[in-house]
Picture 1 (cartoon, rainbow, N blue to C red):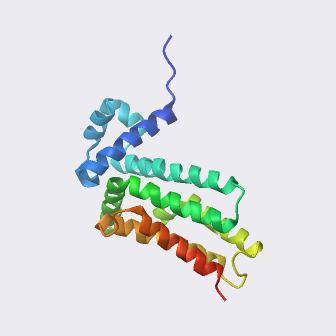
Picture 2 (picture 1 turned 120 degrees about the horizontal axis):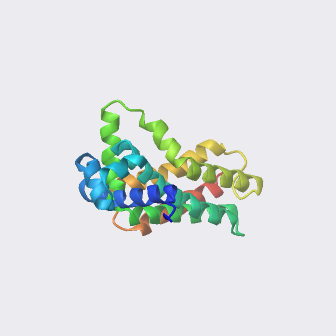
Picture 3 (picture 1 turned 180 degrees about the horizontal axis):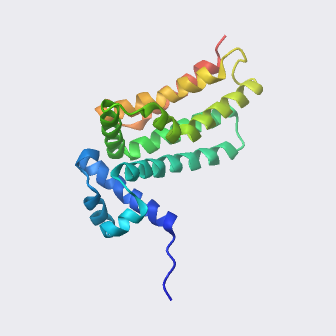
Length: 199
């Protein structure tokens, strides 16, 4: 009897191996043939899962962002102040970015190339990062309700300001001005402390 293939698991495995490939040689230099070879499958089988290199890149990004979202969900369930959970999420995202530096460089290369060709990358980025953005927003709402953060502050803008810390950190990692996670974590924590004492 033939073994049943878990197609979602297979897609994830292909995406994870593609992450390494995109990291090593960059999005533009990767072909579907290279992805098939790196994953140990034929092009025919690869086409059962992905129709294009863009679909593979999207799946690779989803694999990384899903990992972040799972960690964020776990942090949300911990018994702690909302501001402490915000800090935990911030530090987790920063750790993941540093752990995946080469892939982050490949993603930036991909995003810049797509934007140059006229693609709407803002909506794509928002789709991939929706879970993390929503976790930040919910925690800020809880922090306001529990008076950990002053109620006069606009939740959406505070959420955007915290998310901008991730964008800044990502850019610094890519251009090489941020070499370890410690400084980025301190900046993120400082922003939370500044918001907490805002008058």
